[in-house]
Image 1 (spheres, helix red, strand yellow):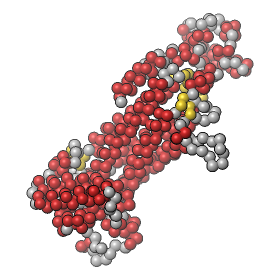
Image 2 (cartoon, rainbow, N blue to C red; image 1 turned 90 degrees about the vertical axis):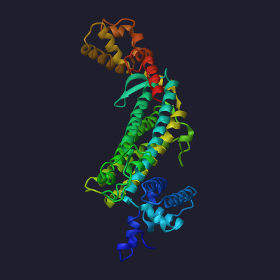
Image 3 (tube, rainbow, N blue to C red; image 1 turned 45 degrees about the vertical axis):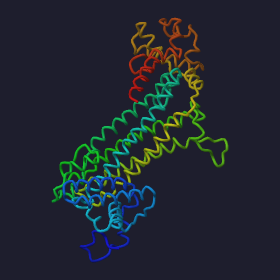
Image 4 (cartoon, helix red, strand yellow; image 1 turned 120 degrees about the vertical axis):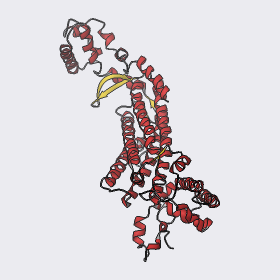
Length: 456
């Protein structure tokens, strides 16, 4: 079968070259966007009187029939037609005859593929924004249920200070809020139309690029045709945002894995998000958060891969740029699937409030509050820090926690201690004392919840 571009060639394409250079195996995912762009393009050609309206209507009708067949999975794409653009154009010619060949008037595959990716990424970005919101909603609901749940807060994975579990969850809410804002902001760059830029230099036909952009819902057009066909910044930006978001997904996944371990037992993941062992019947493995953590690497790889492809390319289009699609498509699929799993997994997890409270009752994470207590009595903080260090060492040596020590033992370290020290050291008081804006006190967390609800 002859190629649509084969007029200049005297030999058939080598079969291995054909297989190696074809992109239809993955860019068929852009089929609907390709048809959408083609319908807008041919409509504009008709309005500009470049094509007769009878031809325009026939082409549009043919494209819509092909779209229906694709949606009904009645289409078989061909490697010999290389990519999604040539496949659809070939189907169109088969459907309506030679007039289908007029569709490509005033454009190139270079601006066509760029348009497809802009359209695809715009749709997917809106969907991802929606799913980030679902994850945030699950975090917010768990936070509301746990405004009184106290847990150890950690630095260096060592117990540091008691905090509210709701405060910990809301930290991730705000991480995902920034992700959502980055996605929204990226739409400013995605929403540019390259259609009509041609192969690299524009076209001799009197087209109206603003009209085709309007028909496709783009906000503006690329003012430079070279930039229009060679720009992949919008994909790099998406992959960068996705990498940051996967970092957040990986971090909370790690927390869920640790918290659900036998050593912690802070939470239990719902059975529907865990798997068992083929040999150890007692096992309940947190496979979903583990795989979410693992899939982060492939998203990072997609970003680095495209950066590497683009770093040495001269203007304008080069075949190397075919490598832009697989990573983008894979990242969309990975991120979408990750968010869809993370939201219900958080929503359905069981929180073991007793285990969390027992943890803060049997450690030295309230030590800072003794230092603050002595500072209020007039002792400089550095001296107070030294006193508390000695008290903690004494407790460790004698197998006692800070609430286990007697009043006499406290006074042996400093006469500034009074009997209210035991109230100060109670975990609830420790949490409530941190009432600065953004702190872990119940009042501040409730204010955070109000702010979070407004964001959603």
